[in-house]
Length: 328
Length: 84
Image (spheres, each protein chain N blue to C red):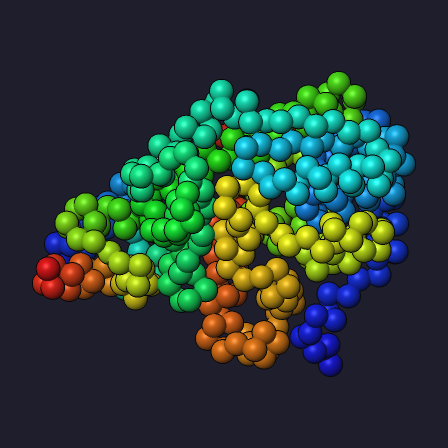
């Protein structure tokens, strides 16, 4: 009989899994990638922290280089936790404020122009974020702009297509500039770049193509977020990091990942994705999450829609025909 | 087929299927299930409908039963125009 659908299904033998990942990482670097170490951009969040710790576990601290890459909208906690992690792991690290590069590229200007087309008063001292709506309520996914004026008042409005695309395109500069710096350091050190998506992010396409989606190896893409937290605790990471609430750290207003993309808190998303991946019926998921069966069906449909809609993000560039000489 | 259905079908064939030889699905077939539109595609469709038919689609109207097939769109747009 199949195990009951409870958080227990996500239980992980973290010791054995850390060893398996370490063997895989050493093998990947030594044989496939032929690099001397790894670069990890550390946001202070649980995923990049766990990746850095796994890399140190696999390779030792001397072969891991950490990067702290804050910008204007980053939470102050990001840099503090990133620095704390680097010191905890004993790895070399560098802080590079990417705000001037983003400013020069027009990231903030392009974003703010699009916001002002929706909220003309938006300007200095205002904050913003985008939230998702619709999908898990049985509707069609769409996005809302939420802004906070300097007096603290919140305003919310559905984003028209053109403004939504421009805000996202401008914001994606952040992930792509960070990746440019990661590869600069990887090239100069003859290192590989670690990508830090967990399974939810990888499966649901919650990454920027040629931004945080770009990497040479992704050591936790198979681990549900719940398991990443367990791994971080197993590896003895500081409490502040293990207790951090997942955020995008991309918009100036605090923005949970569930607000922007997943529509459910990560623990529930983990269970829903696990249930879908293991062919468990919606009725069972409904019981596990204490929701109605119709709602559970909508959640599963939303997961499948996002998986399908973002499939191209994983794809190599399409070619007119295969070139056999460079096939895997 | 209503005029609206024909116009939206042409819009989808021109803008989403790129004249690649594929036809828009049957009038009652789901765009989602037939993988014709993703979430950004629906936002594009909404922008097109609002402009082409001078209507405003509310947040609470962003529903598959209003937007997920040619016949649903035609009925929805006609209701909106009648109510205007």
